[in-house]
Length: 332
Image (cartoon, rainbow, N blue to C red; front, side):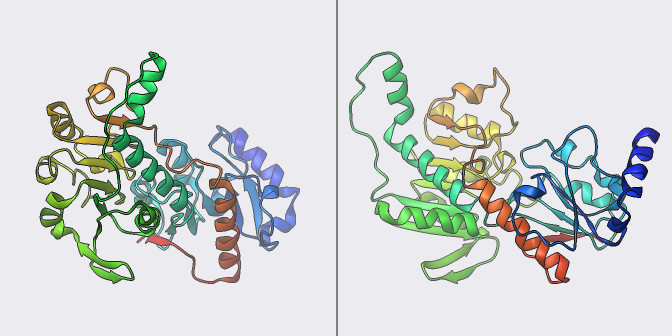
């Protein structure tokens, strides 16, 4: 931070003496656009711009800008010396978690569980249906003015395996119900029982993968899941199966996936890739049987109202000294 910025911050804060008694919150959404925020807190708007809105050392509650690179989101963290809470507007926290090592003990990192469930589940179903029914080929046929008719696979009577059965995984299953799937199997880090049936542990994958026509990845990116979908995982999938990834690109070994795609044995529908953004010239762009969307599971019209509700609820909890929702990590 430059001396000029420090002088500016001191001048701004000297004209708001009452603000010293209130915890400062940085929000990526203008606070005046979020109805019902607690009056006991002070607010500043920062969405990743070059200049900070106030002295970051005063910030106690930092909501991370949405859809900005990790280096932008983490830039103020080293100088947020009074920080108590980091709130993401994403379900995943892998872009923020590495920067936590430099923070003081006791800082809470919360994710946005629930904000993206509907939008991501919608996209997962879109990718499944578009891939099975051959929609990309129809679009290419329309561009070429060609009538490309024929039989295509249906989702009805298919077996679907959801890997990473949390809130989004459950929302995907909700949307699968009307499509008359033969079976939906569920896998998560910890086994449990739901109203719809058992959730299997991750070590059940070798048994479940050969039975699935569609495998949907919704697992967070952690050290345990990075590269989970590699040569062994893919080799256990049945011939002609569809892999759908709406989690993180790093969950899949891209080289291993390309081998299966280029052989024609498997198909894939990917909202996320590794690397990401996928650079021009990368072989994944033109691999046979692959449909790629540019990481658009979350950014829809459903995002903003749900993000505002989350922030309003979290900040009221924070102002009252209550436990925060969706706590993922506490430093130290």
